[in-house]
Image (cartoon, rainbow, N blue to C red; front, side, top):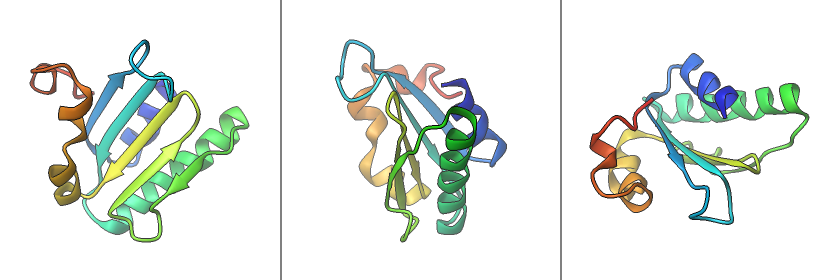
Amino acid sequence: MEAVLASVDDDKAEQIVQIDLRGRSDVADYMVICSGRSSRQVAAIAEKLADRIKQGFGLVCKMEGKETGDWVLIDSGDVIVHVFRPEVRDFYQLEKMWLPSGDALRGSVV
């Protein structure tokens, strides 16, 4: 998890949010949501993250949406990462869906 957060932070992702899914979902233990300023940056953040996970942990990530760069989903097994353009993130509001009420406003941003 720390490697994921460090990677997106190194690539200048904005508004990074970590959500603990343990006990709430069988899909993953954590979800990370962050934003890039453009489609190009969104795709670059996702690609570099997948490369770093492969190099550091020998895991091949599943990735969806890199072609358009509006919303890229990276599934590394225990951690699912969503990288959005800001407008797309505002539209879908995944934080509201997954965070307990009010947590989005109380220090969940990394």
